[in-house]
Length: 89
Image (cartoon, rainbow, N blue to C red; front, side, top):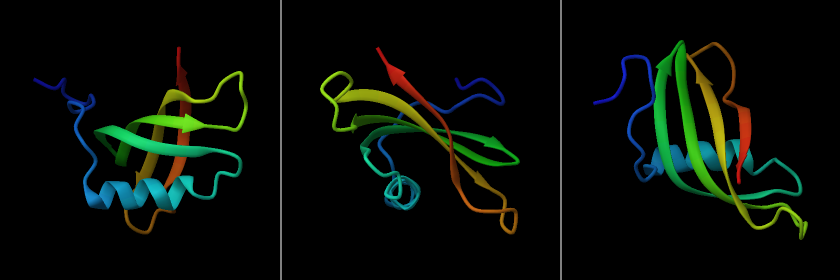
């Protein structure tokens, strides 16, 4: 059972979540992300925590996996944005 206020279980992103992911990450120059799973958390809006495969063009870190969090505020409160990016070791 999910913890109240915590993230949901990991699952495959829906088409809508995938479109949100692409809209936010496609503008990140030099980085390429592929979402594998997503978790959501209801706050004053929604946090989407994506587990991703990524490439940044370097041999030291690429390819790899990361957790990328996108915050989507309530309607009229701004645009969705990346709030954290954590590389998985």
